Image 1 (cartoon, rainbow, N blue to C red):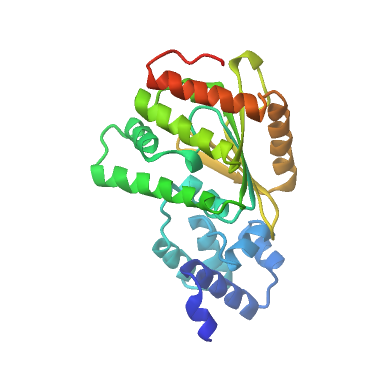
Image 2: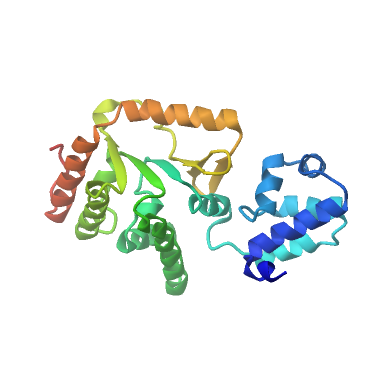
Length: 277
């Protein structure tokens, strides 16, 4: 009983689901079929790794006769992130390996405070200062996953356009690229840039984040304007992985990429056009 006091609210939510499922005499697979979701999702919820979507919570209440418990308590577990990214943000913190491709802007895990603030200002022209700062803090908090020098292993593939787009001004962009280069030089991330000269490549339609875990199946996340999709279906994740490796084959080497990022940082700092080293 003493052990339960150390459970997080999400783990307690999962424990309640497990308790009610067992009381109803159902396996995870049987519950998943009745709720119309994957067996994997039920497993993740019970382990406190993920939360159901509101419609899934409503179906859990109906199937288990929980009188609205799961839907009501879901509201109390409000995410710090946009709904479409919330589950991916949770999984990101548990990953042992993250492979990212960024098509238009620096990945959230690598954004500096100034860069992130400029991104949020551009997205919300009528922003409130306190709301903008909350978003910036949440984004910077994500980067703490990089404080551990050993895990997760991080691969970052950037489109050359990410280096050229001057977000937040020349000085801010120079600092941002300098931070990325520092991580790469220190061995914290593996860095590759896909130059414009490559032309078409396998990931040009979308950003993607591939996450691998110690105790569960890998997942992939893609995102667009006000929308995102987390995928854990094995065949779809494998297709995303295949596209990533195809694009990686078209990228500059780690050494060449590091040199290009350093050169781009210097040129932003001096207000020059970014050129290949």
